[in-house]
Each structure stands twice: as structure tokens, then as C-alpha cells.
Image (cartoon, rainbow, N blue to C red; front, side):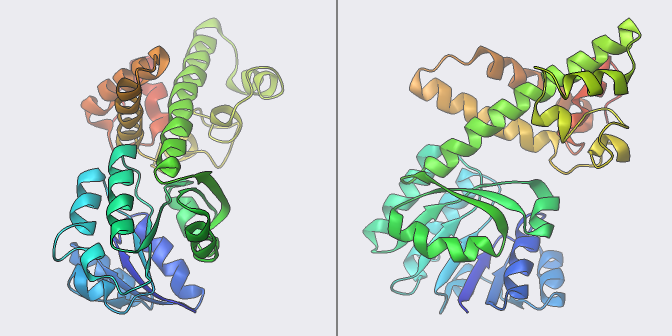
Length: 298
């Protein structure tokens, strides 16, 4: 079993770290939110008051942070992870951030003779709690081989996407597809309503026809056809509209930086921006259907 430092014990990081504790690892956590530390301690984790204390003696350091600027700050500087990690430590960043920052931090880690992977996740809070996450991993072969046993404790599908930053590239491309498809599925249900076509009838047809996709068959945005979808619990978030907007904007930054034309993704980002601006940022992203209907989404 490993000594692990875990930085970032929020909605995703906390259940991930708890699953590592359940797997028998010694996990020392740090977060700037006191309540998150208290919850982790109650679940059997060790808690400390600084990044340096979380890193001290850790063979593995895992981070789950909100954005690229936070990853840069946590890993860089005299009080950061890279400067204080023990020799030979493996660094795993599970945040969803821009590809450029991921590669810059990995390069800084390499310059300090530390192995690092970027390993953003898909599966939301439910997946984090159930240890069924998908990890999209960027980094060298040896670093991936070291990281995989730890990631297996937190997820079900661990996929090596290539070199540094490729995990982030895979994540933003995947969620670009998801954001676009959820809008398409939602628009189809809204049109069906106007035409007098029953939700279940449209689902029964499209789920077995050419309209089949994950946004329809697993995460259906109307109540009824898929009982486990957020639509059946008032669009309580598994993956918030704000999180989808963040990922769509990351995809647009990458598209602009590479000269890639992504008109549907650009429109999806604009629509989710309008949705979030209504006060619905904490609503599940599938709640976009209410915005498309003209309902009060928040």
C-alpha cells in the first residue's frame, strides 16, 4: 500500500480520496475548505494544514483542482508540490484544465526528475463515489504503469491517451461531444412535445434507431424513460451546467489555439453560457432542456 498526498477534497476529490482509504492506502489530505477536511478525517483520512505537509513523505501526490491557474499555483513555487515532493514521487493531476498548462506543469515536474501524468475524469460525483470513473491519462509509459494501480482504486476504465497533456485533450474533446449531443437530444424532445409526440414513444424509437447516443439512452433529459437520469430528481446535479460550460470553453480555447473550426461546439458554449447566466449554473447540465423550452431553468 502507498503513502499518498491528496490535494483538493471537494465534491469530486473527497470521494476519490475516500476510495483510496478504503483500498488500504495511507492518505493525507489538504484542502482550503475546513469542512472538507473534517469530512475526510471522519472517513478515515489524515488531514494537514498545508500543501507541503500533504506532500511530505508521499510516494504519490494526487490533485483535484478547479482550473489551470490553481494547478499551476499548487505545483509551482517554493511551497508547491514539485519543490517539496520526495525523490521519485509520482504526481497525478486529476483536474480538468487546459492542455497548455498541463504540459507546462508536466515539463516542470520532469525538470525536477519527477514523473507526472494528467488524468482528468468522466463520471461525475456518482462515479467518484462508486469508484466507476473513467480516467483519460496523459504521460509516459512508465508513469502510466505506476499510476494505473492507484487509478484502478478510483475508477473502472483507465485509458492511456498518449503523452503529457493528452489526457486533457481527450477530456475536452469528449465533453465537447457530450455538450453538443445533449442540446440536440433536448431540442428533439422539445420539438416532439410541440408535435404531440409522447416522451416515451420518442425514446423507444430513437434509442434503437440512428438517433441513439449516451445523452439519450443513459442521461435522458426528460423524466421517465431512464429512471436514473437527473431529470427524475429535478435536475439535481451529477455534472453541473457550470462544469459543462467550463469544459466547452476549454475546448474553444484549444480550437482557437490550433485553428480548428468547431461551429457546433462554439454554439453549444454560447447556449450553456446563456443557461448559466439565468442562475442555473448549479443545475445538472441536462437541465438545458428547460432553458430551450423557455422555462425558468434555475
